[in-house]
Length: 262
Ligand SMILES: NC(=O)c1ccc[n+]([C@@H]2O[C@H](COP(=O)([O-])OP(=O)(O)OC[C@H]3O[C@@H](n4cnc5c(N)ncnc54)[C@H](OP(=O)(O)O)[C@@H]3O)[C@@H](O)[C@H]2O)c1
Image 1 (spheres, protein in one colour):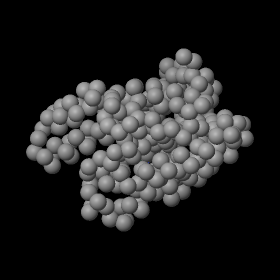
Image 2 (image 1 turned 90 degrees about the vertical axis):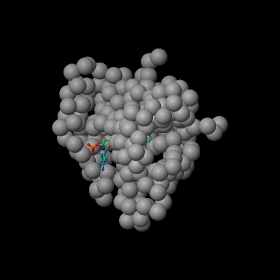
Image 3 (image 1 turned 90 degrees about the horizontal axis):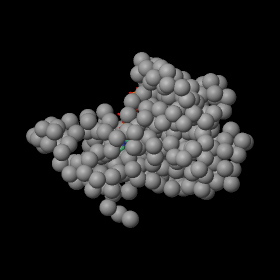
Image 4 (image 1 turned 45 degrees about the vertical axis):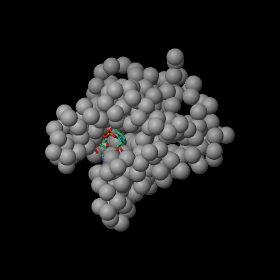
């Protein structure tokens, strides 16, 4: 299938590693020009070099910290300066530390609200007018399967990400007539640094080995294994594509069947 995004311009947040990096590569493979964003300059440069050596869309990067109050202003301005316009926004962020509701102080809540919610909405607010003007746009927000089934021990994630779900759905109805879609993509367990570090913490806390934690977790997934970044990124690229024009306001799971609800 031709995703028909060659020549489109995409901004992918939190893309120095993991899911964001994979999505940027998948979009570029389809011919979209991508801007990656994160805090680690050398990783971003290496990702761009890899994409630019492969043909397809061109890649560039912007350094930005989602905890920064001015992130949305500075990154949107720089992205528009580099690209002229942004057609595709992939709203992704770093994941919060694990913890219970008791660990979730108001200070922690506020700072993660800034990096996981406020700056994602802020950047969409700044890029949406351009999408509406040309009558085409895609906003894809990456969250977590915890939006559907809260995950024990991830209180910050379970508490903050549903705000993005409410926003993404509300936005979808408001912008649909402009040819702009807004969807959410929820990872279950996809093999990235984040998953590895959560497994290490679980191993330390339970006295098991990381291998045991990982094997037990994969057995509990109906497909019987973790997902790959490539599988997740392919789903994301489709949701950002031209043929996905009638999908909006959706919450799509990429979780190997883990969420048990319909
Ligand atoms: N992988 C999974 O199975 C899974 C499951 C459920 C939910 N999720 C969620 O999906 C998102 C991506 O997960 P992942 O597995 O790709 O995580 P990852 O491998 O840890 O990568 C996180 C990315 O976020 C960036 N980042 C972190 N903090 C940032 C900040 N303050 N400002 C700017 N960029 C920042 C990191 O770049 P720098 O360090 O260079 O800034 C990195 O590129 C996270 O929110 C995670 O919680 C993942």
